[in-house]
Image (tube, rainbow, N blue to C red; front, side):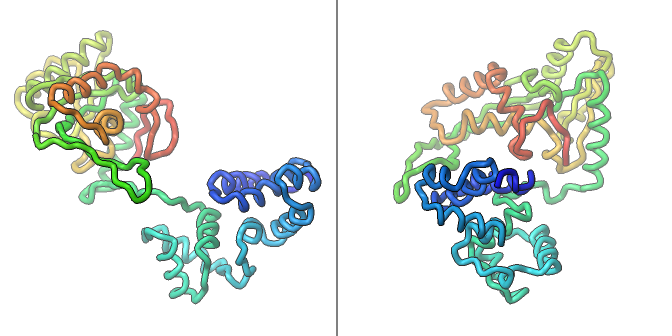
Length: 342
């Protein structure tokens, strides 16, 4: 029975197999995949330690009702399925309403369509329709979508030119332990020491849009006009042959003050301002996230100096983290260069 699956069906089965936690259901998926590869019922039964009758039953269940019929022990056929119109309504509803659990979606389906779904059955239905369980992406509540879309078009234009393009911002990591998720034995606590101090490391930095290892920064008591100009000068020194250097920033006052304007009159640098409430468009935020994961989350520093040195060591050895900076957590993929998206 070789090659009876379409490419899409095989991809779906492999995806289900990758996320399946229970061995008995994994064996069902493996049986169908192995049959598609041309393995005999006899060989599969020996490989999975199952009877030949069981393997044939799995095949028949899959051919009759697909993954749901194969996996679900309490599968009851079409009576539990939504009509095409109901399914479309559910998908549209879930696209604009965020539910925290499958049970909440079960309640919605029951109240809206008077149809009961098992937890497992609904989870498979959601996966089949392209839904995954993940955190929502936070965006500024006051952001203007039209302004952001215009900004994205402008940024893409600047990025296509031969002029170097940097994204600039400040960060102020505080000398205190930040607790984050981690694997802890069930029923037990994992205690992290914390500090009472509020001292910060103030970093004003600029990162190359096409090369995240090209990072320029200034560490000072505060991020201000002087710190900004020092970063500008360092970026200029790195790009001696550039006719123009585009630096994308937010609307902080020290980027617009009189001294900065005077400096820019005789500089190669052109500041490109982002719309208000648009940190999601500043690509340097990705670097700050990697810094938090590597240096700050779940790590205790006894004294401020060791904390500060760890922060500076991270930035001074940014090439060691190239892959992680390139890897876009939001998009779930490794990008060849920074991608500008809303």
